[in-house]
Image 1 (cartoon, rainbow, N blue to C red):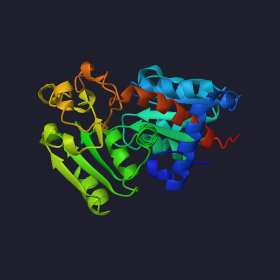
Image 2 (cartoon, one colour):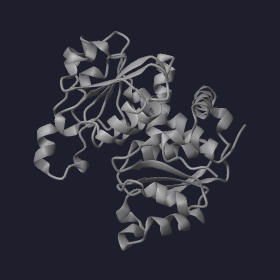
Image 3 (cartoon, rainbow, N blue to C red):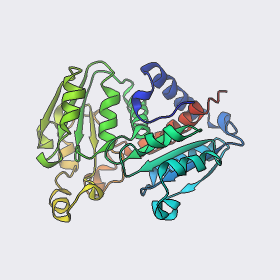
Length: 305
């Protein structure tokens, strides 16, 4: 039995197999319509979610399975003080696989250690978001044709952005990857990622504050929102929330084939006028997220066709 806590839980070869399976599902969805007949997915979401929770549910339903779960801690026995360990033991009696989101870093890992069914980390605090990373990798590979030789700009909340942290971990295993970190000083990438991950692995990176200064050199721009729920005071959030706004004027500085990704939800960091730009692929990214979660469910349940 396997769990998914981090993108690094799969080898590069296993990731390629997973992405290939997702591509096949995209091309021939009918072939997989009954692959999970009789199986049940539990979605245990202690934090609010739209895309991740609904895409997991849609993925299981499209595979012929069923779904049960809760959408907030308040609607579960966590409100009564039940521990994650006890919850997953109970869920293991009802379902065949579980997707868990939690505000505390490491909570899904605690669940996995006590679970008798596969557990998927659907986001734990500001730590990791591996299924979003799988979505990002599939989007990049499908639309760019490669996962190597890329200059990637990561913009916005790099301190608390779990999608950013997961993507960095996953991409450093591919050749000729260069990172450009674009953020205000207060939201810089954590030092442990700089030192223990990037510097240790000789991955080139630079830190800048102005997006306009680096846009012309980017192959990919990964925008993120400033996350209100991660701030301890409202004043800091209000001061930083509109620090970056990508608009048509700025897009004139970018390469013609640069792609704009965003894990969503978007607030103000990408103007709606950019949506019609063919380089804006964040809504395609959502669709790829469905296919990759379908592939992940099949892989962890060891179902092959």
